[in-house]
Length: 184
Image 1 (tube, helix red, strand yellow):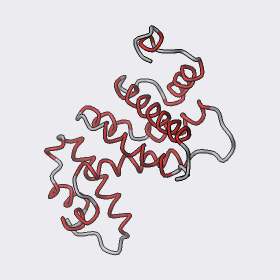
Image 2 (tube, rainbow, N blue to C red; image 1 turned 90 degrees about the vertical axis):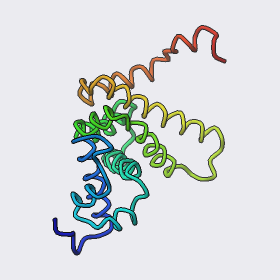
Image 3 (tube, one colour; image 1 turned 60 degrees about the vertical axis):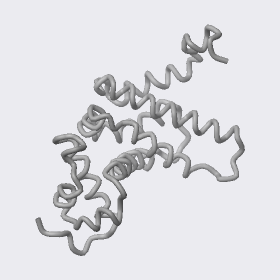
Image 4 (cartoon, rainbow, N blue to C red; image 1 turned 120 degrees about the vertical axis):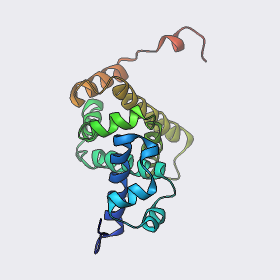
């Protein structure tokens, strides 16, 4: 396959991420060798290693791209929790085939790294412990909602699932393990 000429480093990174995910979807992580990824992305192996240390790093970057696309789609006006989650989930919905395949291959945990990094970049470095805890709590909530959706096979559309998540978050429901005195 001819190598990509006249493209930016960012275009190469995206091509490598896409190739990595495609190959994992086709045959698992062992199928996605750096040689195959490089060939599929039309880059040299050295370009892969200049951009990523491991295949998992390329998957993390792919998760970051789709998460960032959802964040970029957020409107500038104030919004409720359901609308906010809809925008994040819409970005995932467009990639549900890849997300479900990565989930089946046990790689969903890499999404947590991407979500954490993305949201923590938005945080003021001088934030206090309360603001930091609120952000980490939010990151965990978004990740676990996405994981649940994947566990369910993404069988609900993003708007319906965002509504369910927002309803539970806004209801004050306390999970039984927290409500019976075993934690705290």
